[in-house]
Image (cartoon, rainbow, N blue to C red):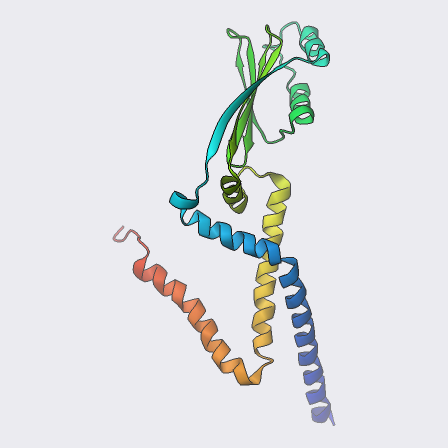
Length: 218
């Protein structure tokens, strides 16, 4: 009786695995539809940067201090000795949307406080000209193509996009695993599919060891 009951139990477990694998495979593929195409296309672009590297334009804009900003500097008797960094960062983020702060530079002789920011495919510098009460924004904006390439790399894209990349990577792994599980459900195509899988694993490994440049003898 135990042996007879074992087979139906195994069949039920196998059937449940296939059902859940198919469910996950379908919905992960639909959820990742746009992102998978995006990363594939931008991966191709990154492999051909001479053609698809994109472009960038340098621009600048002078903006008079707001009354609040003038009061902020007036309240600081020695802004270069004790610069109000937190308040300046908040001002720049609220007014101009810049959040990827890198560093602050001070040039007391020129009367400049410089906040440096990173952008995908570009940069921005908020230069506070204290004596002139003017904010000089110098920035580089990348083309759509250049921004897409940096989004693929996660370069200067912020924490939220970093989560998008991590989650996409995990879901792509799960997508591949569930697809591989479903191979075993199809008895007619199983052997051929496993051979194709083995070929897909072996081909890049062989290409790496045979054709990719490397250093030896060290």
